[in-house]
Image 1: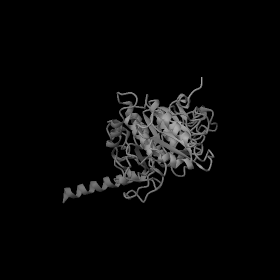
Image 2: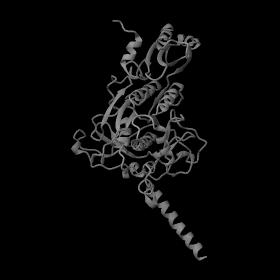
Image 3: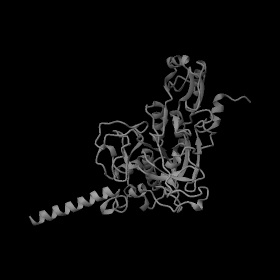
Image 4: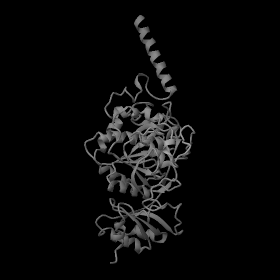
Length: 446
């Protein structure tokens, strides 16, 4: 029986015509007179997406991708036919499928202290040690571990055979391999995944929420680049598979109405989306007029995360802007990477998964399974945040696991009387305490 294109595309599954779509320009040589675009139908003027396919065909284009949860498609259209498509009354608008990717120049290091002599032999992996970030946000002193919570890591994939990781599944939306190949051949996605949920197994590192279900949603190619359509496909897959948390350590220079619509719909369906602010830099924590964040971190329905260093200072590379929600550790963070190894890396890419991990801890305490309580979880994160910088650069403040879970904030997240952070931050607090004591004593005797 001959099948229609609608049946063929629909049969490939949840947002996942990955073998046909999501291939960035860097990986596919389109004809010079074609463009890759999102095509949005005018509501009520088309009888289903089949008619939209016909419109694309009529101008000599090819439909590359349809989604389960969004009423628009991605197509490759000849430049000569693009204006004709835009002028058609049945088309609401046509938008370029722009590029996204890893924020800034991601340059991990492989410290000898962390790495085993034989990566393939788990018995040779070093003894487990939490990163400074896990300790700084108090995640090493709480009871929930993220059990039963599904987290989608929208990135370069995750190494499925890593001794410190357990990958529940995933999907590949790039042109680098078939849909079922979500292996990470870059390293970024595996590093992000380890910060969220590296296993508590006495080896290597441990994540903020070590019992979460990690899903490798490969939306960036093996070189770390991608297209917004691949990111939309990843969000679509998470929605179709009830993945509660959607973590995005990536960004693009331009905004996208298509991606914004996908985010809005996922948010309305109860998913919590989190994103790295970007690595475009700043002029200091008081530079509140600067807007250096990348998209989609600037979207109102995304939890946007900036980065700090071990001394509780805003990281020099971190983007800032009015859309910042939270601050998290981002400099010199130890985590997992490819080839069954461990790496130290810096960036808002590393800060975002710390917040994702705490969100998983809080989500675990909610009675509702699956998407739904995103508003209450987001509120718990922001309302419990710890003031560190005292400026717009931290949004509501540093994410704090004990506080977000309703625990005593002096137990772990603040590091007790002296607070957390690096030696400089602790020294400053000691000076403040001594100064305060002498001021009190002077008032007493004067």
